[in-house]
Image 1 (cartoon, chains in turn brown, orange):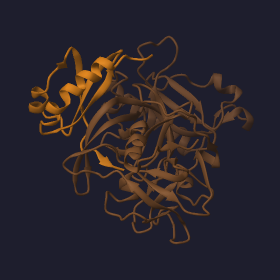
Image 2 (cartoon, rainbow over the protein chains, first blue to last red; image 1 turned 180 degrees about the vertical axis):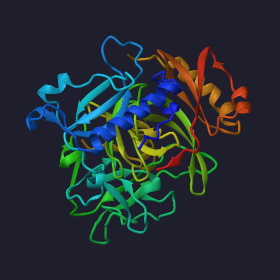
Image 3 (tube, one colour; image 1 turned 60 degrees about the vertical axis):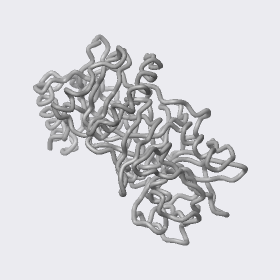
Length: 339
Length: 74
């Protein structure tokens, strides 16, 4: 099956319509020849061969090609010694890049129940049938809170304070009161037909709930956040963990200082101090990833709070410094990230 | 490589209210066009009339128009 990739998604790579057709045809051929058949690359011996875990489209970063352009990306379980003898171009002469990824696990891991609670996992109000993501832990005046969006923790201004929050969400298998981890403390109101500073809310962590402020990555690995919060800059490489798409990387900041009109269930609102994130191939986030903390990659410094997306698979987030300032203004005490 | 964006951000601030007042414009920001800072205008639908009505540059900064459909919460 050909991937559903449009020219617009490759807009930085100077790909023509004809090149896109060749790219998609060769992508399809590689998927059939290796991914679907399970046929290994390289030499016959298992230790000298590579299992293909994914096929994608990326930027050609081969040295000596300053023009860039697109390349085919082959994700392999490991780069064996025989990797140097693998084909360097596809049938239509498109460069092939090989990347070692180990095992790719379904992001179902992010929808499971976690104790201690960690950043990047499924949460939602007990009273709602949707799912969102726990961004990170913040503190104010000695109290610890989980940080996510207003539209996740307060269902866009509609839930009363003290509403209970479940980890995981109800659709993901959470059951209240057993899985309650926090209760809604404060939210920055979403102003329909007006300006909203940030889409953010905090919920106080319930007594007796064990929380680890680190962010869940794949295979149960947790990654410590690194201070301080940093501002998004164009082309900054970023990552996130979220309930639906799990850990996504290979993404960069596309635009900063963004003022955008966002569609909420009851109308639209204008949000300032946002930035956009784009992956070369595929989505950085999908429905259920709202609330994810976006961090630098590498570095893992907090950058933004993810809250929206568009039809081009572009992700939008509030600057985290703006989020903390808005919450500080709301609560009257400094709100800061727990590292 | 870091692209200096301060001047483009200031120009973007001044231009934003007028641009967002136009039907079909759903966002204004600062992006990169090659190695220079550019003003990014997000439109719901890239119609010829709307594109023709938008500036090609703002205070000397190039304008990049991007069709995004609806921006929705995730």
